[in-house]
Image (tube, rainbow, N blue to C red; front, top):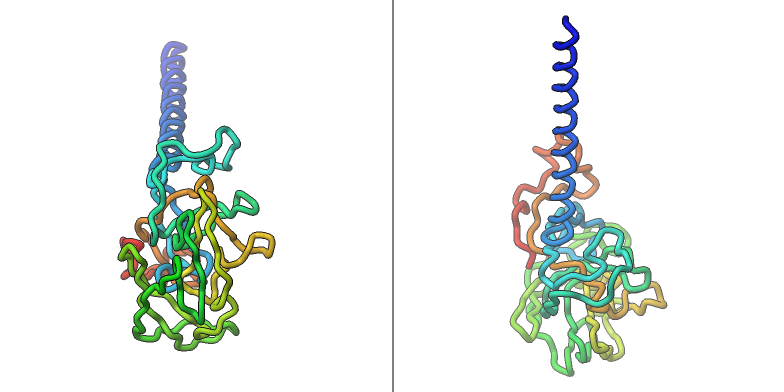
Length: 258
């Protein structure tokens, strides 16, 4: 092969590598923009939101729903405070937020109390601003009790003052550890979050200095849960594609989160 031909082949190969690197960089930049501004995937590692969300669910969270804070960015860099393009969470939203006491751990709970609200649990029943939140008994479901055993537990359809309804579990009946509480008065700029699996949820009923969540500042919100895009049985690794015919919960895919 002549020197000219060798040179042309080398330039062609160099150009091909350069194009590949360019495409990879562009794809990474697009992924970062989508993850930061639009949607971020999350998976559910605990049972605190059963039956709304199950261990093994994978869902998309809309980053634009509440505007953007430093927690909208990867690793939450301290580049600015507050929120831009802010839109306040609505009562009943299922939201991802950064745990206030460490600013880095992702939690997902339901928005129950808004700034200024008074929230209290009395014998398993939820009160907001002194008014009982209606709940209607529905069919029992099977889940794990406090000892890890499968058992049937009471469930209720709970309806918030703005009309949002969802199912809650009272695993320990109406005598769970946080089924009777003092009145929580939500500070300005903060929210009161609770899990739908009421007796298996460390949430705003547990103060931050006791290892709980406490009140959640608006700045700590990451986004609103929108849709389950994938789901596998608890304990099944999602990457084991050959097990999908049996391990995937096909009926949960593309289910909206409500």
